Image 1 (tube, rainbow, N blue to C red):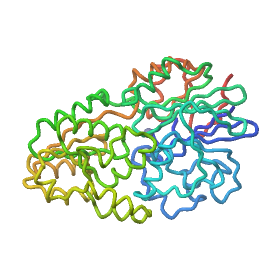
Image 2: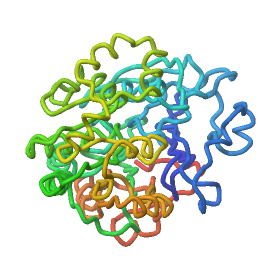
Image 3: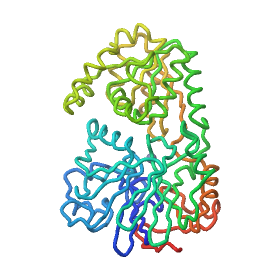
Image 4: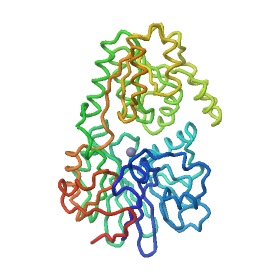
Length: 433
Ligand SMILES: [Zn+2]
């Protein structure tokens, strides 16, 4: 079996791996880059606008895989998507519609949600749903999906076998989320005889975490809620389901009303079929704030009936203001924020629980909050494995060769792990068996 990592040997984001045998070919992940070509700036997704497949191939944005994209004769047997983060699936919209896409049910739902609410449209795909521990065949490949703990809901790792070679692709994972049991399970009964492990290393080169796990995050949020005398805002991704659960539990324990927006209510509702234990819009302590932008999107998607459903738990700004010392409201740094805080009197003494990667926290926004007398407290834990867990993972899987992927620090793998082989983007490499 041959491997080409088209993007990801030395960067985080835009992951794409091609695996081939004599007759068959699959792609694992097809993400939007997070950094520019020279890796010194964020990737500007505007470069995608109005461009053809040919132009994007020419720019090196689309990985050079023949027979993968619309307009070409399909020559790829399947695309496997590990999870619903854009840097792993965001280029799917260019894939030939006849090529089947394998992903988890949760990933499919969240990709559909992003199709409705964001400019990233994947459009119509030929989807095949795969679940934890399920083996499936694609041409000469035999593939097993493993559910993993990650900040994306229902994330998968894949074991891929062909030509007597066995490759394990970790996808993005961690051992400190609400589903850490999934990590422990793989560590305690790992798949055997792995020839090659493609393992992410996002956390290499990053600082130690202040909040070591999702439970510590829940406690951190609870401490804020217990001691506040004005409104608190939760800045978090509504697709980070673990984080929503942590916030909800902290609210329950402190008698705080968790005010979610329609977007968040919609996401939780879509995932209800998959997991009954996720908080929903009609659970105790949950209320829904309607914003026109979200309501319009839901209506455009033909889901107006959900607006009537969510309406039962609707909360207005007047009530939020009146009960503000008992409110945690989900919001983000966008145009809604100034509008919302305009309804809170006084706003001085309000707090933001900043519960996402601090790379998104701009100086401009911090200055704005200082001016308004709003304190910002960072309470976050990463979606990615810390070095100790990466070591435990590599040790358990015990591969003949470990290949770095999804990292800015492939050079550190050699110091931390055994049998490391650093590839270059686009390099064709035969898996030794
Ligand atoms: Zn991810």
